[in-house]
Image 1 (tube, rainbow, N blue to C red):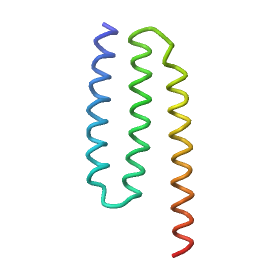
Image 2: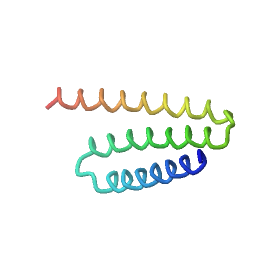
Image 3: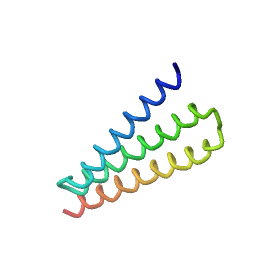
Amino acid sequence: MTSIILSIALGLLFAAAALVLVRVYLGPTNLDRALSLDVLIVIVTGIIATQILRIDDVGALPIMVVFSLTGFVGSLSVARFMARREDES
């Protein structure tokens, strides 16, 4: 039963990732694209976490942590860049 639920969760996460990729492609501004990529990082982290639960192996846990931290630093960088850009305008 748990395997079925995790498989459904993975399917929904992949569907969400596909929709976010469409948003990255169609986003009218660069800020929309950056926000979409942040959401994609969260979705990929969820996919990795679901796979860890499904396989019952914590070998991918460091990859998930590094991926999450990279996404966080990227979000901060984009926010600082946009703040500087608004100050210059």
